[in-house]
Length: 465
Ligand code: ARG
Image 1 (cartoon, rainbow, N blue to C red):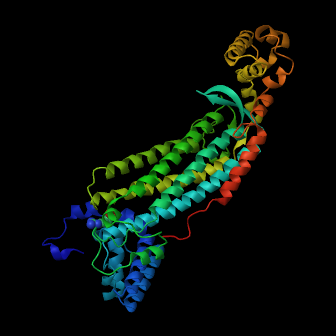
Image 2: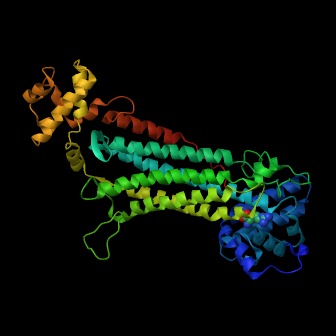
Image 3: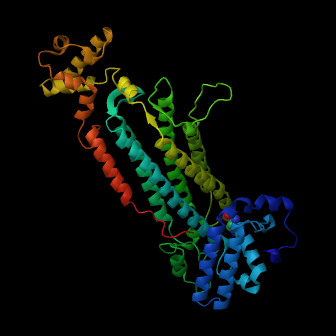
């Protein structure tokens, strides 16, 4: 493409070193869409004529069909997806093909392709998140009454409902969806028209190209348009946060399905066995999701390192943005798919959860709150409840098993027989009936509200790259 300037051909090692077509061919659809829009705009403003535009568009469509059916021959001597497609176009339609690159550079071309790609993948991820969130809300509804121990420091802290616990997962995932929507909003500007960095001397109208490609408008500044990849950073950051959430959920599932906890069992179809121990049923899926979170975090760190030293405007370093981005997309989408299936088949052992919640004096706070309602200052109530726990521990019983006389001896006459309801697991969770609380009624209500929000969310994808 640049033979005019050079007196010797590119060294074979350099050709191999600089070629990106083996991975950036993934952008072919976006590259064709960008070129079709560019040619259409060029014809509209009169830079190329209508016949050239028609030949270009038809040629590009033919190339796209060939790529899709596996007939297209990629060549690494043509470096990247852009030059492969452009060269094939000229081969196919002749002179008109050579006009496509008028008023354009690969710098604004690749920035456009990437934004289109990230936009489409953002929409796909939001959609996959919607399915996962639906599965989480189903679980919350189904297990709204299921009592379990809530943990802090991985020590039983207070009883909560299982539904409430998984609504915490939903809250995390809902913010993730919001983050991806933010990414989309900011990235949806067209770089094409910036050319190499300074714009072009042709009378282009990037507003036309932007409209054709579904962008909200052109980028403000041509130097910025070709150089920044902050949209890729934002996307990967949103992905890394999402994967961190999935990883934490995974960690809980791994613990919970261990026989030592025995809270849940994962569907067989989402577990694997051991090649040596016949009895094993291993939670490899959540373990892998936990592991893959590290990979996405690594991609984010890699992209930061890629960007931080670059002076304006375009530098070839940017070619290295694609593999971490592609890997992030593949990892996130695969993780969301398996996670949704796994949660849909999750079995919850209600009796085991209740049993675990009943151990460890988890209603001690309820006893203290009860005393406060009877006029005991909180600090004194806390102390009395603490002594009650010690008595239970020393006699090998749970709080619920102490009789009224024992409770009165420790906490005073303020304790009446109605303390029973307060010390019971169901009483404890039902008492937390404020908005955002763990009471079954509140969980059902919160799940319903979350489902309504989920239904009302707009997915951005009115157009595809
Ligand atoms: N393959 C390049 C990339 O991914 C395309 C842009 C190349 N531009 C250039 N001036 N060398 O960034």
